[in-house]
Length: 357
Image 1: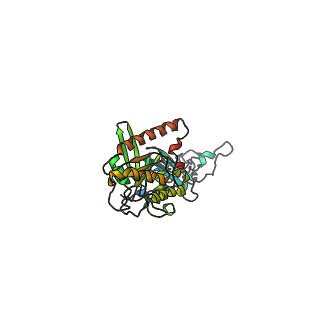
Image 2 (image 1 turned 90 degrees about the horizontal axis):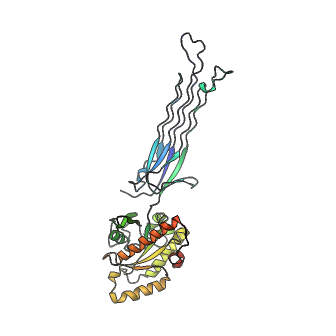
């Protein structure tokens, strides 16, 4: 299925039904009096967070969603029936905003969460409502109120604890397949990941976290170059970023430090809050570096990159070092979750301000 994380839709709640002007007509009832009923309420438009969905593709080609209008009032004191509501199923993590103003209206953050995105109009009053001691034969009625109409932008932001970022072919897909249940496409050429992949990393029955693998970034991504810029928004809800670096590029002329700094620069240009998220360095593909050269290579990289945070030396292919990385990530995620319940000062070692950029 094609991954779609943006869509634009038009929703319209149902209009309320009009009130009715009617009088009771029965044999031997000369002054029957008014009996015109009210109109029915228009149908609402709801949105529900469905945990089984992971894309907005259903809304790419189905953009118009109208609820049913309320039925008009009728004689014999009969009120109009309410219009049928409609419910739109959306993935957890969907942000609903006004397409014209850009204002965020709703966010679906919990499975099963239900919100009203367009309210149906109330029904009009029939002449029964206007009966009084001095107005025994009212001929007034009111039309139904119009339902809300909205032009909306839907934007999916994945709910993951950890986000992987790096240049194309840095080994992010291999890493997520090594530590989680995700099975992304893996090949020996750049841009094999064309859409985000989510994987659950389980350390024990009650210990797990979610990791997201995004398409590789290149310099200029914040301005629209490459594929990764389309998915940077998915990193905004993560708690921790893992910057994966290819320590054994296929071309000896490639400067891995310059590439790593370019990634950090793209984060900074895209979103300052994203740039300041805790970010750890993961040096990958060290199995392809001779054992006697690893220590010097890693030391030189860290020195030139001017990095002071946690560093993990791994091989996603052989899974060397992956276990210690997973354990450290789970510990950090647990600390952050506890800190959300009781805010505390962030450890400066993990701050994005300590990373080159």
